[in-house]
Image (cartoon, rainbow, N blue to C red):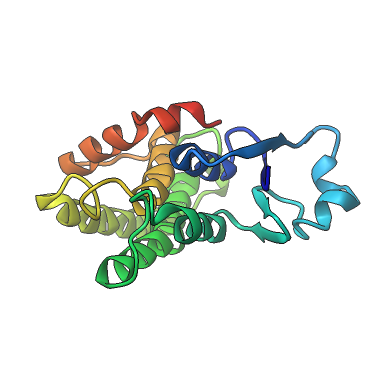
Length: 205
């Protein structure tokens, strides 16, 4: 078995686990011993020098950062399975929306959660910034508007479900779990429910 995923449960590694389940490609799942500090040991640091998750080894190639891994899996394993577009406008769009999910959507969403609502990961009330909450909340809303418009005439971002949907849904799903409001975005809410109800997502940890 060539592919090994190193991860923790309920981490950014979950989106990679989900992707592997969608692909149906054989892989080994290595759940690191967080309490024992396995992620800080020399063997794992040789794979992921930042000591975080996820990391993926495929043959003699090693990848870290969930977004990089997701794009790699899409381009190398997902095209033939219809989970990643081949060359052309759809591939350009898939790359753009996938990167947007983490560099834009996740950034504003998490800063709003930290400062603007009560959640398990939010700052203590006396450490929050109303200005930061307002700025990031407004930007988060605008990004939801962007996604709502994209879904106006389609069930998924590019026709059928692809890893671009997975990337965005994995972030928004966690945000909703933490209490981030989706507001008046019915298409986004319906699309997110469809993505998270996929059997492969339910099998991923």
